[in-house]
Image (cartoon, rainbow, N blue to C red; front, side):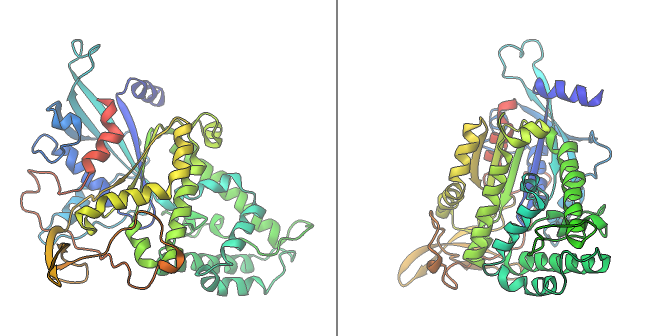
Length: 458
């Protein structure tokens, strides 16, 4: 009954399910905290000039409400804002699983057909937070175990995966996949493969790591046998059953059916709008391999979604997401005149798959934003010339510095142009804020994100 009522409300534009995810360390928790805070304080200041409902004076107020899905952990906005706005502000701790929060946005209707009947309306917005690692499991649904193994084989031919996977690949050579099933060997192989994925993530900031639950299992799957499998480099031409190969394949198929499909059936099929966050600046800092990995991850996500009527997931789950926003985070870590470049760079990364999504009838957009602005624009003189800088407190310091972090290219540099120290984008501490309960958090373009994701609903 509740599900049926929810569908009616969404049809009547009274309810929206907004899914928020991001590639590793892209700032999901900070983004959601800022988004909620901006809306809760939307009537108190002029901090949302490009969010039409607030700028026009039609926003009557926003209130946090009990969430509809009681089996999903709550997004702890109260804890996040306390960390962010304390005497010694700190960045909120990242979440490691799915969470949910509901807002009721009350507004004056601008619809000529309904504003005389019901001038004051309420839009319920359910914000669902889930790890980007889980999103990258989506392509597995169209891959057999053998196809997935071959994909990993090809990835491990190139650096840095070639070096990082050495210990795992060496262990694979110690047994024959056609040997009788051995739980100890399977467990050891999966542990070494998981260690390889963690190295890719922590040492190089790589994102295309599958299965996604291996590095972000969530509390419900830690230590579960379903996470004990890995790709094999030597697939037997024939198999008699009850072998290491058949057991690995069985667990891979179980993972797809009961973990990946289950998640998308229970949650993903109900999403209306989606935002995917990416820390593009991190890729600049860490080099060409990290950049190509991020580019391939984002394009794989877009290609896999194919939101339109003919898309694979639409046929499987009845998906109906009609808007997707890709956002380059930490826009305050570059000088103001570099913002168009950061946005254009992300747009160029996704150009082909953007076109496919648009063809399927999905409204897509790329945007550079900062959930919480922690730097200020500044200027310095270098060799007699005035140059733009940013000023803030680096994450590992207590003193503010002014620096020019570097230019953001509009197009992808050639591999040989990714020279050492070409890019030097620092991370900064959050700012100390005075009247946080009277104004929205300082931001860059959160109002534009709100307008794209929700503006047409008012």
